[in-house]
Length: 167
Image: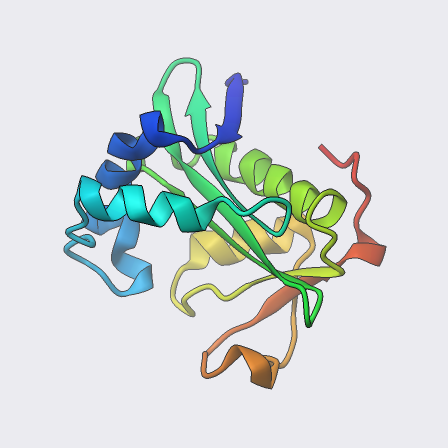
């Protein structure tokens, strides 16, 4: 079992985030098969937006034997009580149980600190690995709310169906 460290992303993590976002394998299912082509200047500006506790937080994931693995994130829409979640892992960190632990961490933070009433994800229809992860965690496919705009998928977990000590 890999020992994970999940910490709020800071400036010291940005070169790792840049590597993650510029990796076409990681970004394939979000529509960027060549990666984002992001640079450090844009990431410094992005970081100021990405951390707005408790409603929005971005975390960097590290594993003892791997180093930097990826990211997880939540952003609570206070008007609708919904936190949108995200997770991305480098290929070397995939298939090791890291995503489940890290996304569980983000879900708990969104519910217990961000005060979301539900959390949601919208995986690409062809990303079978992501779908399997969300199913394991208890996400349920539902009609996509109109306030989220166009999209092919929508899965959610209601806070009533989650215990904040599930890890």
